[in-house]
Length: 150
Length: 171
Image 1 (cartoon, rainbow over the protein chains, first blue to last red):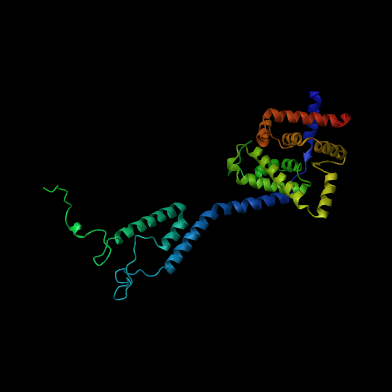
Image 2 (image 1 turned 45 degrees about the horizontal axis):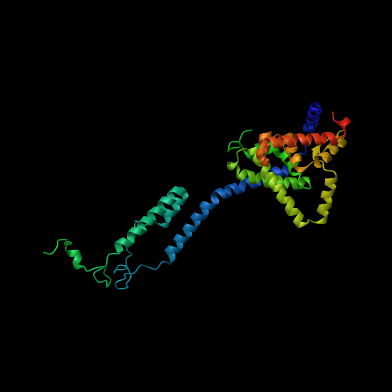
């Protein structure tokens, strides 16, 4: 019985399945080749493009900063443009980082975030003319007195 | 079987298994062309997610099986055009799963018909083992069934073929 099974196995294994057409290989190659490349690069490219567009729109449509105390522009009196804040990355810097690697882009985003957090803190100090005061300025001039009244 | 890597391109895997995969897909597809479509779909699925595969060959057969079954289900819903059905019917009447010379054609067609009459779970094991070149362990992985069960199905399938095929022609 085993011998007959072996004979049958041999006969079956001798049969050759119909081969694949040449077009099948080409179709698979077309599908594997292009989409995988696209898939690898699509997501980072989409993120990079979105950031670039957002940065561009922000640059174009953000109004010139004004002085809150008197509502005037921060343009200098003689009409010159104030110095660019070097702590904030520029659009060109983003382009360069994108061209280099994702790690560079991430580092630049971190730097931008850090600069953005640092800037409001420096601006938060109330000006002498500001009506908003967190506490009496006189308290700032004198060291706190923790001594118990006698 | 070596795992495909970037240095082992998809062509190697394709060349090794293409014919066996098409025969395997024919269990669910009604024509050679439909089977090729299923193999294409399954192969691409497999290749894109091959990193998660423990055994590439077994995973490839699993992907092709799913693609062929999906196609079969979609086909039954869509009810393709009559002329396509007629063409396929003609091919189903003359399956030609295998290449055969004029001398062997009658015997080959008979084997194809008896093979097609086997229970699906036995037939798929026979196809993967005999023409896909998979081991029982790989087949077990592909069909998610214990290897002992797979071996039993193989044995039962062979015995059924031996019983159904004219004995005098098994030589």
